[in-house]
Structures are given as C-alpha cells and as structure tokens.
Amino acid sequence: MILKSFESNKIDLQKNKIILLYGKNEGHKNEIISAITKKNKNISNYDEKEILDNTTQFLESLFNQSLFDNEKLIIIKRATDKILKIIEEISEKKIDKILILINSDMLEKRSKLRNFFEKSKENLCIAFYPDNNQTLSKITSDYLSSKKIQISQININL
Image (tube, rainbow, N blue to C red; front, side, top):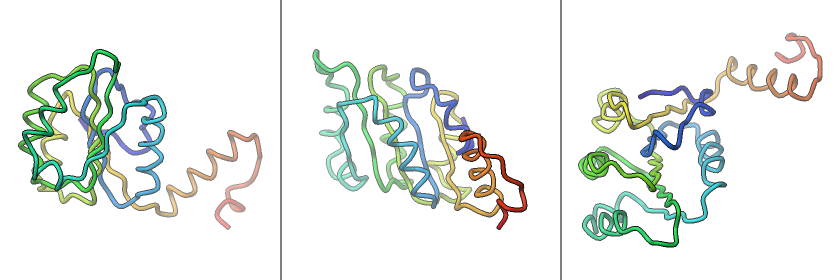
C-alpha cells in the first residue's frame, strides 16, 4: 500500500506492521520516525549488512518475544533489494507485537523491495522526495494558519 509523505497521519500501526520509508528527504523521514518511536520504549536499530551477515540470529531475536515487553520496534537502516527475502519471510509470519521500519535511500521504480511494498495490502510504503517550491509553500501556509497568522500568498512566496 502506498501513502504520500504528507499523509503520514493516516498510518495505522495496528494494521501496518512493516513500513518502508524511502527517498532523499532525510529530514522529513526522521520526523516521521521520531513521531512513531516516541511511543515505544523497546527500540532496536539494525543496519542491513548486520542482518544479512547474521540472518538466523536476527530472525530468532525477532520472533522470540519477552513476557515483559508489550511491543518491539525495529528500525532497519540503509536497506536495499538484498533484504527482500527476509522481509517476505517476516511478512508471511503475521507478526503482532513487532513494528518494523525500513529506512532506505532512493529506490528506483523497478526496485523489487519497492514493488513488494507497493503491491502489498498489509505493508506500507512512503516515498520522501526532496522539497520543491510547492511543498515548501504548503508547509509554510499550514504552519502560519495553525498559528493563526494571516499573510498573503505573495509574501509567502517571497
């Protein structure tokens, strides 16, 4: 399932347990990640290379649930198409108390990882493209309207 970056408030963490965040806009990605992680205390960070080197150990630690932890949050950084088989295996298991955030750089349209998430109904994928004048103008007007500051579009453009 695909979401636009400005629709990040529509993320349903109960339904979507594996989320792919990809693109060049690192600031916006980090904003979304911090909004999701502020609710969780049990956070594990992995690099894709760590997981590929120790796949069985990673999967065992993933599926072994502690009696004391309510939820587990796993962040996988610098993901590429190489991790797709592991993600497919995790997705088939129907995890309940584990949320996985996959942070990747720009993925091409024909990327297998990107296609897997776009076609999936349970998993979520959000693209973060660099800001342009239109998005910056929208961010500015949203911020100003939330602070109840009235200003013309001409001044915003300046």
